[in-house]
Length: 333
Image (tube, rainbow, N blue to C red; front, side, top):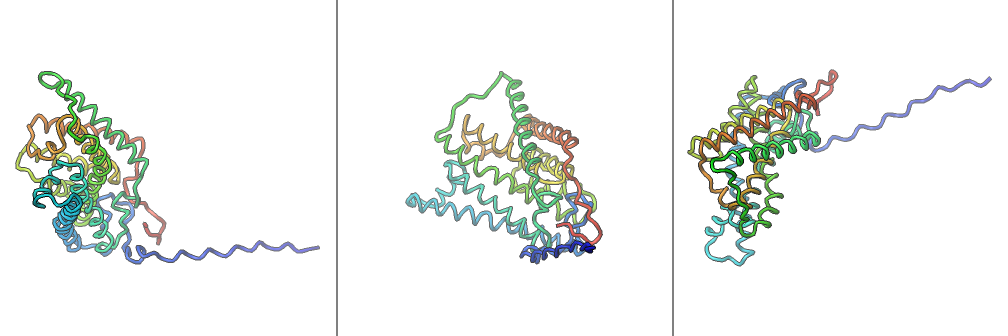
């Protein structure tokens, strides 16, 4: 009688060698915490977080204008150096020509690599946790929030236009070169909007949240910094932008990631520039430094309506709000 042979287990596959990011991101993300506390790692300190906030703001103040001026200089050289560079630069940052959007938005886009560098090299955490508590962008959730952003915004805009004193006021009179402006805007504006969210609602909220237990500290302070960087002395406009920062920050905590805030920001900026190109000009929108209380009220109402819809959508979709709780010894990576 032949003896049955026991099956031999296949040898375990060799572990993948650590990547360069693995070697740098050595800090363990705490399990079961909300978005604002992702950077409360075992080695975290208030001094490190405060240093990160200062470095981030300084980098923004230095890198953003350098990139914008560098692109403007290349444009000036490409078109034959007409007149003084300062005149061309003023025209570009005023969005008087389509390439001006590239100059302005590419400079702001530098906020993304700044935020990534701070999280990775200063806090030693994987930069994917800037996107959400699961360490990545949740693309399906982002698509849903973006659709809600455009739908809710245009619904309120139409209501605002219909109920305006004297009746509807939109008159379709496209600015000169409107198509070129719109095409450039569609490419660059989403990047600019996402960059602001990754820095203000992303890095700042997480860095501030690593110092204070309450998520409201990060929400309110990051909203205040966001408002200060959108320089204006008009009280209504200040309140408008601060309200957006607070609502966007609350959504980040409530949904566990930046997707909803980015969706709202993209919908707002793309719609504003599109309407400007079709009714007045993008330069007109760029030059706005004050608004009426009525206009600010409609703006805040749009953001609040979007926030309500996302809150209701999140109850059904249930995006992850906390970092994963893994078995003992496993790392959240």
